[in-house]
Image (cartoon, rainbow, N blue to C red; front, side, top):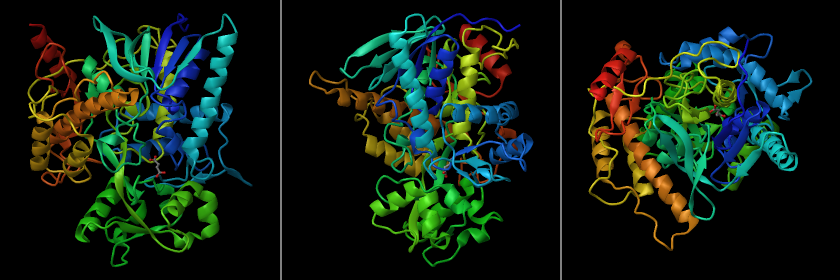
Amino acid sequence: MAPVAPSLRILVIGSGLAGLIAAVRATDAGHSVTLVTKQGLPDSNTRYAQGGIAAAMFPDDSVDLHILDTLRAGAGLCDPAAVEVLCGEGPARVRDLIRFGVDFDKDDSGVTRGLEAAHSRSRVLHAGGDATGAAIEAALVSTVRERAARSAQTPGIPRVQLREHTMLVDLLVAGDRVTGASLLGPDGLVHRADADAVILATGGAGSLFPHTTNPALATGDGVAAAWRAGAAIADLEFYQFHPTALAVPGTPLVSEAVRGEGAVLLNARGERFMLAIHPGAELAPRDIVARSIAREMSAQGGTPVLLDATGLGRELLETRFPTITAACLAAGIDWAVEPIPVAPAAHYWMGGVSTDLWGRTSLPGLYAVGETARTGTHGANRLASNSLLEAAVFADRAVRALGTGQVDADGRRLPPVPASSGTADATVPARAVDGPGAHVDRAELQRLMWDAAGVLRDGDGLAAASAALAGWKHPAPAGQDATPADRVRAVEDANLLDLARVTVASAFAREESRGAHYRADFPESRPELAHSQAWVRPADSDDPFLVLESPERAREAEEAIAC
Ligand code: SIN
């Protein structure tokens, strides 16, 4: 029989799909929830998702086919058990979203579905044409606000407290357990929030790069705080670059679904260059299209390539892609009559805080869900439209695992958590301590990351970047007259510096090319490296970069550290 979980105080940090689902499910389970978010409740990466949410929900599809496509895209680095969970539980979580009020697009035959790269079936549900993320965010925000209001007025039901414009600074750790977080409030002061469990759902870190489809708030706050607290983080070298961002300031996303509908890529000579590169042409796996565009751009002096969607016709473009149509018009382009300039941009982090299949991290009391987590579902290269699905599936599971000790809410025994310390044999020339040089400058850090750790990488560039990053200092402590916004900026810059260092270290250590990680000096995949790399920062060591290569080696290292 399933154990009855006690009512707990849960701190959920982040208000994208993952955080909102975690908050809703935790109140369903009788826990009291404090939901913290850096800006307003609707401000998150989820809101910008266009393509949609992939799930095997149609008669010509199956969970097995979805699993196969996900494993193929992941380039040998997916955890098959995590992929089975994702694809198997995905349809039920999509039905939950419908119950929470998400109105997926329909036509006469029922719910409509799109095709995206590397999917063998059309299985991507969308809403508002290309406004899927915004529709999901709006439905969940309204559910959470309604629960918060009701709980404030109704004694005896689980409390939901919302703390907007409040930023995670650091996790509180007592012994080996996470017991809450320090938070920077809208008043510019740091507050302490105690909790029985903390669920990190702070999204990715597109702001590591100058060109990104993410909003500026994506500064990897949860991953950085987990790292500083000593949690294992993994696979940060796998950053997915979306092939087609509109090449104008702000680099808005131009969904893969546009290519799914038939738009083609052209170089400056008007050639459809993808035809010669991959049998899937414009719908080849995302990393291949992004790299091919980067190479074409380099060959044509850095100018963007063109995406020609004129063949789709004005009516389809305006009804199916209203968000992109508006972005083009804002840039003075009518994409119904002319091709649009596009270039790759940082889009999604496959790596993150290492978790098991229940969102548990290596630190008791700490959970990570959504883009903050490395669950193993995406491997080296995420399949399009699997990210919203992963957020929904694993946020739900994390809540089911809360407070149940070593068994899940269904009474099954949980596997051991990921190891929390590692071997020291793969250190690299980078350190997460303050360097002797200048305080970090965000624009310079972003340029450096783009050049050295962007779409195309090599060992020399990564080593030089590592040395430059090691020389920078964290931001100076905020002075008395600093505004709350200055203080937020300083915490974000510190997070970006820590994460840039570990990302470059991870990319340097992985001497092969696989999925989204491409090394010009190691252009092939190496079968012996087809495993995840986890990193930890031991509390009492001044050498923060340790690689976990296998559980056995982790145990050896734990023993060595204990001695
Ligand atoms: C897109 O619409 O192309 C993005 C979909 C995704 O990244 O999953």
